[in-house]
Image (cartoon, rainbow, N blue to C red; front, top):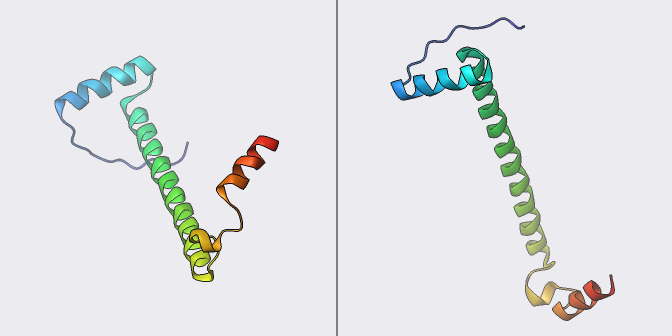
Length: 91
């Protein structure tokens, strides 16, 4: 196991009871449970950042297409709604 760093935290009594009960139910220490929660929080934050970056890239693509006049409004489309429905029926 990697070198550990000691941290002191303050939680309310309800959190303490829930932490103790959950750790017992899982058969792990409270510290291990807190480390797991931190890992999950950090992974979730990283996933949110990846999604935000992907969404920004998509939006930039839309802006670039709009600047070039591609796909913006009826004037930039190379297809009609009816054509899309026909394609869906033939697939």
